[in-house]
Length: 83
Image 1 (tube, rainbow, N blue to C red):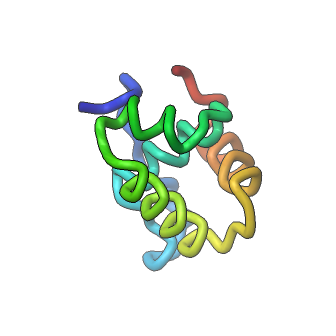
Image 2: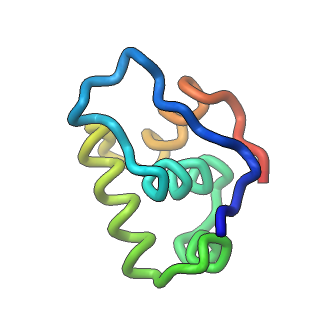
Image 3: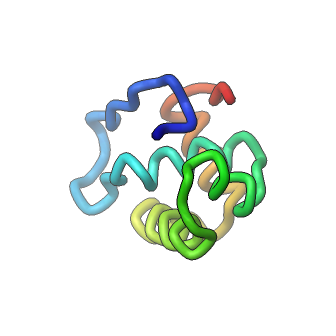
């Protein structure tokens, strides 16, 4: 079950190590909506631990130090997310 009704395609300019899984990308889009981990877990139908893992992996792959960095990356590459 996906939280968003949008199909995401990875931008062509991303390095292979930076490519996010669909779950990491979905979690990143929800971070960009300023949702808490608990809210993201509910929307995605997964545990808090899974959300933390998706966000941690996305931050690592994209070299983002913060959740704000993830949100900025998402908006720059995909535009404003819709809930």
